Length: 117
View 1 (cartoon, rainbow, N blue to C red):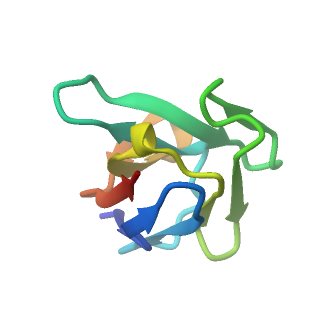
View 2 (cartoon, rainbow, N blue to C red):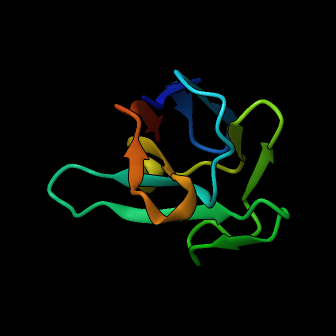
């Protein structure tokens, strides 16, 4: 059974940077599309960025030019480099991965990012 574990969250001042990492464990299967989502208090979970196995990436408008997503297919990891952080980036950040052959998706438990003004 595949599990995703996020790390790298924390408290940072506005304008600062953080790098989030997500690692899959429990299986050696190759994961499909991977991505980062976030959920701020009182708001719905939203896509931040996603990346295909060939490294084609997609970003939410709020993340463009500030965040960079990357992955290591051999290690089944996906990272999110965040810079120029704003207080509105404060949220719980979740890693998500598509299982192969359309079997389903798996989510991590999330990591909290707090950006102070």
